[in-house]
Structure formats: structure tokens, C-alpha cells
Image 1: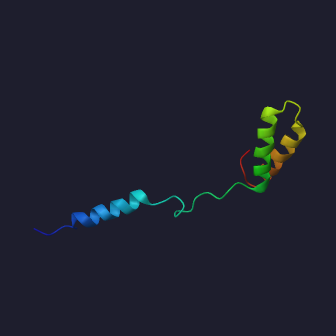
Image 2: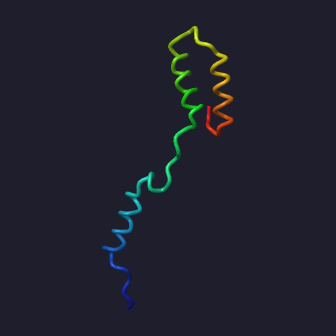
Length: 70
């Protein structure tokens, strides 16, 4: 009967696979600067009813242009 791989080796490989961090696999890059500005402005507008909606529209277009998600 041929000998298979030792169970210790299989357990070690499974442990490495299960604990592999997403950062090591190439996690997402941070959002573009225009998107971060948009998120900050949206937070301000959530608490200030007199915010300028044109700023939100402009930053949304810039964020999309830069490859982010609004």
C-alpha cells in the first residue's frame, strides 16, 4: 500500500491557506482623493440641511472619473 502525504503536512497547508491575510493577496487600494472628498462632504450634508448640493454633484462626477464608486 503506497504511503500518502503525512497528515501534519496537510494540516500545515490548510492552516496557511486559512490564515492567509487579504493584505498579502493584494487588498483593494484606498479610494481616489476625489472620492474621499465626496465622502467627507456627504457626511457634512447629512448633518447640515443648508449644504451645497452642487458640490456633491461635482465631487460625484470627479470620483467616477477617477475610477471610484460614488
